[in-house]
Length: 358
Image (cartoon, rainbow, N blue to C red; front, side, top):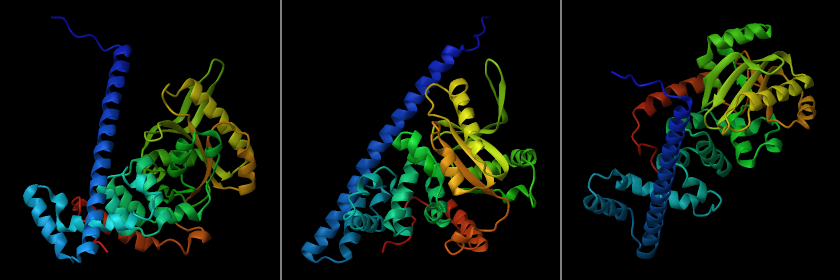
């Protein structure tokens, strides 16, 4: 009996290439179907509005239309009275905002309902739609992001990175959405200043919580990741991979305040990762320097002239909020209660069980 040989690296590469093609084809097919569905829903909403204005019909038109459509298309809950009202609202909400019309067609109907029913500000809607597209948020994640006021936090604090200067426009926007200005590490249980090695050890012990705090799409690779060059070995504190950015993310931990030389060292590490570690089809590696505090002037000048994407963020070991956010965020108790309630509700949600249309 002849045993099958272990697959060669060439075959593994071939299989991965085929798998990627299939996945990309499925994604493209979904986007085409989703755009057609959203166009249909928007047109139905427009026609309901026009018919009501032209013939003076009231609410009964929606109930009658739903009943007849469900007879013609049995088993299709998409034509329920509730959903037809949402289509009408969808048309009225976006008919005046041409800038958002191409974007709403890129996310599923349930995501649009979540945004439309929970977010009124136009800029905030644009933020959540783009974040859903770029970061692949599920409906549940989107709802939790809205509940936790992600947009308000996004605009309240200025992020400090050079992504716009060194990355292509679409990738720079994705990276900026993925990176936070500050990271809450209170779950590490550290109550006083510590050395970087201890901070790293605690983060490894709670790596699942660290990944949740970093954000959606991060996968942990290693701590003290070794990059071997022809002459030396170099070690990166924490190395992650972000599957939506399609790039390696190096994280360097600093126990104290940011120093300008940290940026140059990170730029050096990213050069090594791009030349010796990253896959050929990956995007450029990104670096995040986590420090206890930073000076905006120092960060700005340290990032000037770097040719690799580097972001400087603070970490916080307590739940104290920065003063500029104190009046913009709910209390920890309110937020915890809301998130718990949302998680319970989300588990029972059907596709169209959002709030009633306005």
